[in-house]
Amino acid sequence: MKKVQESLTATESSVLATLENFRFSSRTNITKKQISNHDATCYILYVSGSKTNARLVHLLRIWRAQTGVRSGAVSAANMGQIPALNSQVAWAQAGMKLHFKYLFNAGVSTSYGFVGKDFHSESNELWLGGSTFGEKAGSERKTYWHRQAKGLYGCTQLGTNRGFELHAQVKGVLNVA
Image (cartoon, rainbow, N blue to C red; front, side, top):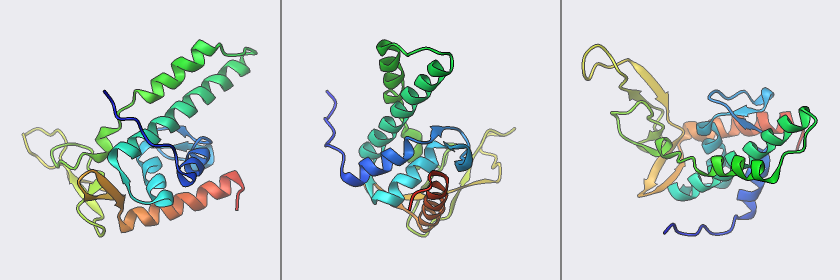
């Protein structure tokens, strides 16, 4: 049986209300109101502070469920329809099923590498498929958060900078103070 999550804090509610204006995309483009999962995670950590893995996944699922329902409703409205309740429920359920575990995988044998070793981490070298087993692709991924303790994550210095940048862009696009 899954553990029931605590109610959202005021800060978490505020962050989700902001993220609700942005739909998921593999690449972030704030002016087009698109944000990637890893930038959404960085933004959540920047605005609301350190979080457990479970709490971050919970917040990301809420965001993706909200945007799924919203974009489905907009699509239906553009076709002159009112979406049925069962459609809205299906869109929300699809968002809630997402796992997001790859964002917190600290292994060097994967192609993710978002987790830094400490606050000062800047990047991880990624090992991608090559012609020979173990061949380095030479690619690096910026690390925006690090593991502070088992299951607890916080921004790295680079993540704090990225969060500040995202926050400024979001405020500009949404015209908020």
